[in-house]
Length: 471
Image 1: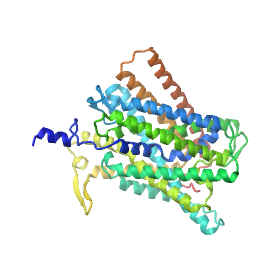
Image 2: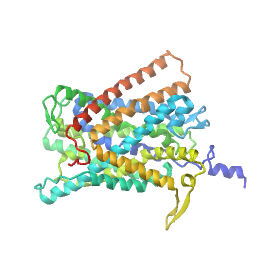
Image 3: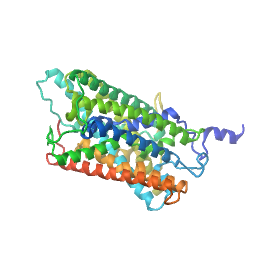
Image 4: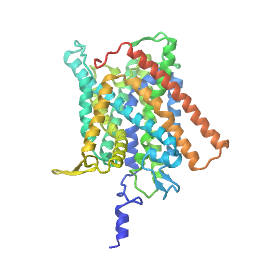
């Protein structure tokens, strides 16, 4: 046996075990990351923007994401796109192409965004779990019981579940969870779409207007003023941006893909398919939700259909959301887990608590490698995100802030700057000006969305009591 040939069969060019990811696993990871809880707020977002601007903004976001994702996927290897040095994470790519303080800034934004996404998913999962409980309560009482309940217990239950799944050591070992989550995302999106179509058929016409929600409309938050109309429109931009955000983990997904062919080629195909499928689903769900409810489109689409009929179908959809968010939470948090654990292992390399792995045999399954630092820190992380979610259970506002905060720097600025550096594009050339114009436009959109979302949070805080939120 030739040891070199045997080595190449088991290990990649960087000495790590052969990557086994394919076009389909990469696609499932992207769909799991993209079609998340954000889809539920799209009918509300289109209701703020109207029939003209709503779908147009959504398509524009899809085009921008598709283009910048293509730029970012080429940054996986430094130098030659086929044989160059691998960049395992987003931060590695920024360090290799830009360096300096930009690495620190990128890392802070990326990991803070991942942290915030975990909070947002905890809120969304608790809302869906409560929706199941309330629909059954309404069914049993035939609508006589208001079925008010607190979200705290459901957030704690979701947190305990995530503590268990967070013990999966590596990102490439959650592929099966990602596929299950992707299936669930299609399940609840299809249910929401179907119920929207049924509601439109029952109404006999499409609701909504060309310019979105009208000034003077009475909502749960009060009468919509001209100022609130502006804030809500800006917040809608953040909600749509959040619904498409996955660039922060694109390179981590790409690092699971095998080669040949070159990893960026596989990721380009996976991105095109994923974003196309996602955009079609988003347009259908958002537009049909708006057509069904008009100005009164709910922040969470599935809670707008009531709780009595068809309660069992809504239960299935909300259960699918919970299962999906369990997987999506891991897809987003595994890169953050890996960063902290690698940094800690380097910082305290002689500490057994940080570096030692203990084999724990699991009957009829496998051998689990227990690391006490991983167990402790991941448990603490999930506990912290759960507590913050209980303190700030504002789903739409959190979604808008996360979308606004992460969209420009992580989805546009760094991919564009790395592409310029990689291809040595000179200043003031046509291509350089075009890329900078794209970046500037997206910066303005992000700032506008952030302002609208912060205004929404301030409005919610007027009637808010910590740990006492009920539905």
